[in-house]
Image (cartoon, rainbow, N blue to C red):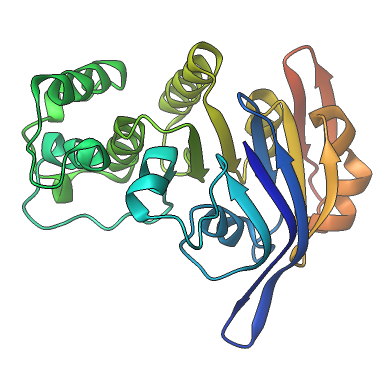
Length: 256
């Protein structure tokens, strides 16, 4: 579903990604982790065709750099970390924008399009917010709405950029559980940039760790999330507890 070979991205004078190789099968959930500035967001933007890149990139069989935007929007949806919300748009209208790639050139939304939105409002517990202005929402509420807009595209590949950063623990689980259900039921392919290493290890079936624009580890959560590697890459003191649902990464205080 996703294939990158020698992916390289320069932004201005800085090389942000340098020689990234990545292959993701249909239905996989890959969590991309790494310290600030490692290139996580840039990788997602390259997969979505939002930044110029060199090397070979294919997403759903398409080259994001040359494929028509409508084709890419039906294939891949990106939930950005900092969404841009038009003034005056309601929550329902913002989610409905996710149906745009499925409309004919001069068409309008059908009952089927509205049914998709209704289902997402229910699943993400957003019905009470449907008529509110999206610009009046809290950070956590807006994050759920933006995820709903991405899911409304009914993509084959879902790219998540820090999908739980503004959510409380209950809504973190709700959002990630929903993505997990869609992945399992519909074969949705998920690539999620995540800061929380414990959540990355519990939901990602595979972890790709970036540092300095390159892949430094790629494997199962237990293989990648070791105390030694986290210390080397993040310069952090942690303890890693191994549980049946994935590693738990705990910071260690300075002691006495």
